[in-house]
Image (cartoon, rainbow, N blue to C red; front, side, top):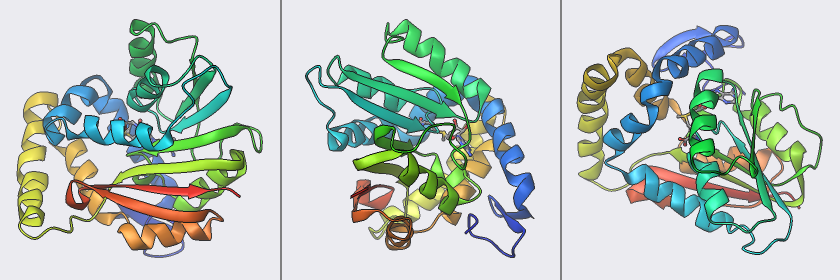
Length: 256
Ligand SMILES: C[S@@+](CC[C@H](N)C(=O)[O-])C[C@H]1O[C@@H](n2cnc3c(N)ncnc32)[C@H](O)[C@@H]1O
């Protein structure tokens, strides 16, 4: 399954139809362009809400607080927000591998993790969520925050998540979703299509990249549909929780 395919070989890039094999290159260009301003823009675009959502993700992951060994794979980890929180809120035995396809995003992440003095806990690997460079059953948990909607073939990424998790491993996905509260949905539309591209233009000099980010949110499967896709990938006890009225959602599944 491609990211909302319109034929076997075409898919969408935001609201545009593009060839599937062309899409990842376009996505990579977006993140290369926004990497340096990504963290600032995240705060401005979400009014800081993304911080609370990421805290919530780590609370649900609930890594060990002692020195028991625990290994997280943070896919599409970008500038390191999830890995940083995880390392701060887990015990000395917890380590993470941050895997991202963008060298520019990884470079920012590496700098931030070094500034936080957490290099010994977090390793960086450049790689594609659709073909992870890791062995079968090698991680206790897998997180992907605001990453899966950028992937061309969601089913391939989920199959890879399933493959690299140990039996008993936890899959957690934080992603923008469908707002399910009246009035909030209209405010959110205005914010998405009017405010964010303007912010993107004035802060990052790049309205087009931010328009892609918004459009890709609208193209991503809604809560129930995505839960079904996670189940189809083999995960059990699949559930989701809406955050801020469905602006974002955390999907959870287990490899059992
Ligand atoms: C919106 S950012 C999210 C970064 C971080 N997880 C966060 O929540 O702040 C999306 C990230 O997905 C990465 N990405 C896009 N396609 C990918 C792929 N196929 N495999 C791995 N990473 C990918 C991008 O390079 C980017 O760093």
